[in-house]
Image 1 (cartoon, rainbow, N blue to C red):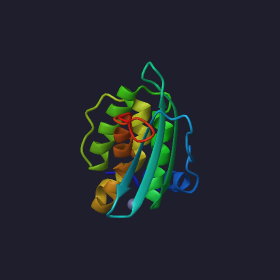
Image 2 (image 1 turned 45 degrees about the horizontal axis):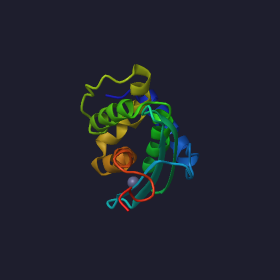
Image 3 (image 1 turned 30 degrees about the vertical axis):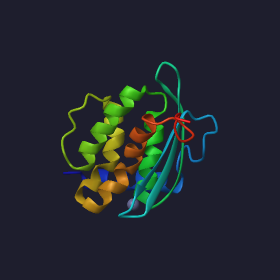
Image 4 (image 1 turned 90 degrees about the horizontal axis):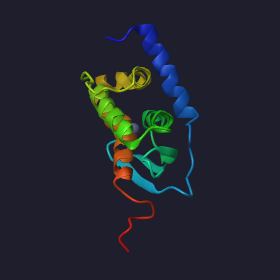
Length: 154
Ligand code: ZN
């Protein structure tokens, strides 16, 4: 159960990210990008990543249109993955999926990161909202598998 005070705090954080999304915009020199769509709610996210040769995410940006949860989640995600390696960000994504479904996260993510994603744990009580919250993370995983500019296959 989430403490009511904590729940209010979480709500504040989500509203703040929804109103003032971090890293909002495009990234002209991105080397990975993907678009995500949640048809249940109409949320759309376009995510841009620049991954350096060592596999570290050294810049990130997103554009999107959708409900407050989808935008807030994308905003929080960009904050969290910036500076991480792609591998670290993938395990955080896995932890996030567990959390959003109300399942225990077994991933060995950083404790501070786990506290930050816990802000979204309330969505587990609203099945319709789970897809809003996880859209950005699925789009991130798609982007990792894709080169920017529609793929390298000419
Ligand atoms: Zn939504």
